[in-house]
Length: 245
Length: 145
Image 1: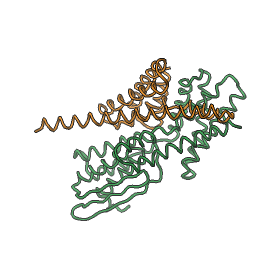
Image 2: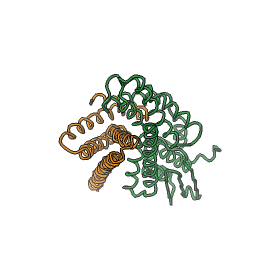
Image 3: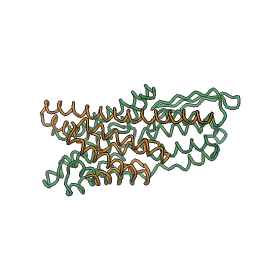
Image 4: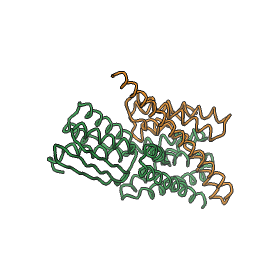
């Protein structure tokens, strides 16, 4: 991107895109975009956000500007949502100018994926207690989840197979859990599998699809509902495949 | 059990990058709503217990979000995680896997009902929060003239 292009329209669409990419609600992304453009003195603003694309058009200093971005990946990054939100709030409040905002955007780090794997695995270990496992199940759940999540990390890097990588890591979780229980019958298969899959359950997609639907963003709501449904089916199918064998 | 759910929510929140402070808050609210769910499930049906526990958790999330000036999703996503019918989904699939189709259909229906009641609770909490915010705005506008 050329430096001359870094005006408020580009900034607004980048923030809104980041918001959608991190799993923010559609109305929030549109609102951020609108308030940034308004703060920069643009008129005739129109913003359309979908989970898969963003379109912005506005008159800035008498010149008509239009930008569009296609959004290929959608993840869960709650810190991202919070950061984009605070940047747009500060611009609206006049505490931050456009250049400062670009600097902050460049400073946003995506976070260590390995740390995320570690946290997911430890969370899964404790979830296995919540779902009726014993103290013994902690270690196998952590290990099984860690292996499945590392696999998912590499599968995601290979390409954009969203659903396939979820399904494969569910298959791995279930297969490893079955193997562990077959070798050491003291462990509970149920607790290990449920602990392992709970972090992949589409909670955010479902919640957001409902929020989008209430706000009237029907296309976003429907798209996210579809995402949530397919993810649930894929998780269920992955587990069932192993259990049926 | 409450402690285990608090710790697991805390780590889950960290894994989706909620930030340390927000994760602690989410863990505490999540544990409270999970304990509420366990208390309610003795008297109410599964669907009812999940509904009220989710409603409680999400209303807390919306309130805390306004206090801590962060989007509500930062709290509500980790909070509802232990209530999501993962175990039910697993048991449903186990039934299908073992050839027990009638048990599987039974499980699938209850899983859908629980998921539906959770969605309804999340929706209601969001609506309530929005109504309160709008009422506050109107009140402010009146005061300002």
